[in-house]
Image (cartoon, rainbow, N blue to C red; front, side, top):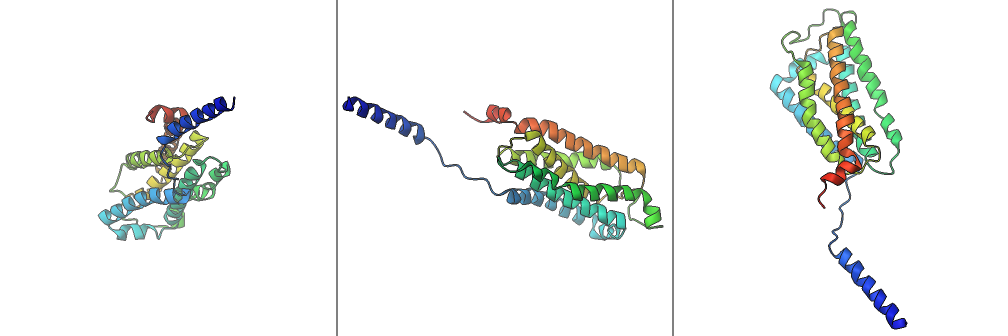
Length: 229
């Protein structure tokens, strides 16, 4: 009886060794802050390229207009906060309350954008260089958001978000805010309600597209189908 038990134990040991023999150690992901910084670094490089192309003078002059300066600060802070929240919520065990982090800077961004319609009252006669020479802000926001969205989804897929749609929507908010910030060096930000609505529509499309499509790509079933067996 003892000999039989020993054989069974030996067989189990060999099975465990066979199963564990092909396993490779998993390298842990960097902290959410590090991954967010890497993604934001790519957006920053794009911003530096745009400023170098159009020159910093016009951008600095725009930043002297109160609503534009507040809008720029709000957009940048929203991108930073939303990116961190997206990577934080992609880690199982992290609180979903991180999703609230981007709300204060988002309120500043949207509020300052609305103040643009009152620019003639805030800064009467403000001469913003290039105010009628650069068009296509909607196309710019959408086009810039595509590579940034693809990058953040790829980075988020390396984790295992338990609420993929929430994580993807936060990523979309980060992308839309980053795209809006990148638009500022090259766009006049005309102080009209139409311009504000166009920007809002682009932001809504970016967030919705990331939340829906990105959520599906981040879902466990999608990950299982794409991962090699």
